[in-house]
Amino acid sequence: RDCILGMMAIRFFYLVIQGASYRDEALMNETALAIDWYYMVAKFKWSLLLKTGWAPIFFQSWALVGTDMHLRHPDKIWTDCTELPGVGRVYSSREMQEMEPAETMAYWEKLVKVLDSVSEEDAHRCPLAYAHVASLLAFSQVDEDTADFSFSGSLLDAAQQMLRRYQEKNNYTLANLMLSKWEFFKISAELATRVDDKDGRSTLGSCGLLWCKEELTPNPRTCECEIVFTQDFRNSTFCLFVVDNRRRSSLRNITSILNARYWTLSYGINWAYAQDHGYEIDYVQPDPVLHYPDRKIGWAKVKVIHDALRERGPERCNFG
Image (cartoon, rainbow, N blue to C red; front, side, top):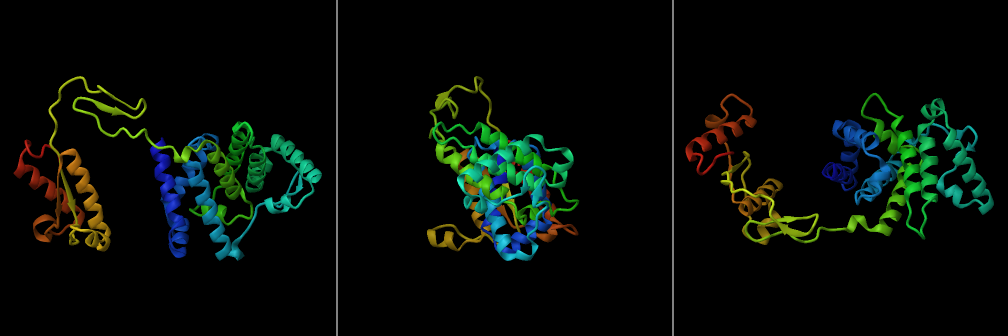
């Protein structure tokens, strides 16, 4: 599950560093992002996400992309509800900072009561406004002295449950959330950052044990070298093939590395991995006639592996 979170965090963060046109296209038309958002809002409790180092990356990425979209598409900023039953007008975080302390406390009390008794009908009618209210409360309940974030986490879960109710029939759900007037992403990002500043989970590294002497295996949980495989097994032989019709350049020195295209760099990384694990690796530029006659180029991989395994035999290439 942690690996899944890591992959999704990278994909969302990738949006932050891309150009505006790419970002808009991805948010509007990439089904993968829509699926990622579904998993994040429906499968992973955000209170648990706060306990990982991924929370600041997710929430800050959403907040930054949302801010960028607000600046570039001010005419598309929208909201579901500006008033809520039992609360009246819903205020932004900036407006709340300008309130008098007594007025702020009275408003907090209203929000808590409303969030505890919200009806299903109101939640479906105004999910984004209620998510904004829940995230405001979550941020306000951080205990700096004890570093106890459990109540904030439960309120963040409430915001998540509200956002789960909002779903478009197309892929525009996440884009519309980014363009919402309400600040659930921004406030959740500030909460996640504050939590992370206290426990530092995003900066926690491994114990550093990467190698053990023969017959022992590094255990990252205990940070000790242990016997994991108790029987002798014959190592299988593997051959890796990178099949690409683009010419691979040299990686002989730093200049060639800086000038190399991404497919060459990718092969270089895979080559280093293969060398470290005792695998063979080849970069093959397929021949249209020999490897994929009257077919798409993807079929070349099948022919390349088939011919190489047959030629080299199981002693050299048991698997490809």
